[in-house]
Length: 168
Image: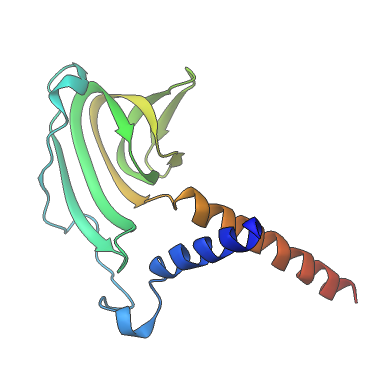
């Protein structure tokens, strides 16, 4: 009985996150532009996060999913060091410059032009920019636990069926 309640709750929550339904489609199916041509606007870093220097950050919105759970932006910043809180999952691609990133566990990585990185929601990282950095950021709001568990179970069940189907 509890499994059925869990599944029904997860399914109900999952419907809310379905952005591909035709009646909810509001955005064009393809949004393309040069990241260097988007109008950048000031996006100040929270002053209490700044460790040293006077970093100046800017950003430009590129696109947003209809369900507002994923966005793509272009972000740049001048020299400085600061802590950054990742409220959502974030994948970045460095376009220009470099940044020295220190994760919560003390791991240090230098990200340069062309590098790809993932930052998990709910974590902090220290960013040190010696000159300038420009990145593309794709951020995604994590699903609520019930929805996430539902998809994990569903993927396992479908994965098991696919494996059986492949063996036959």
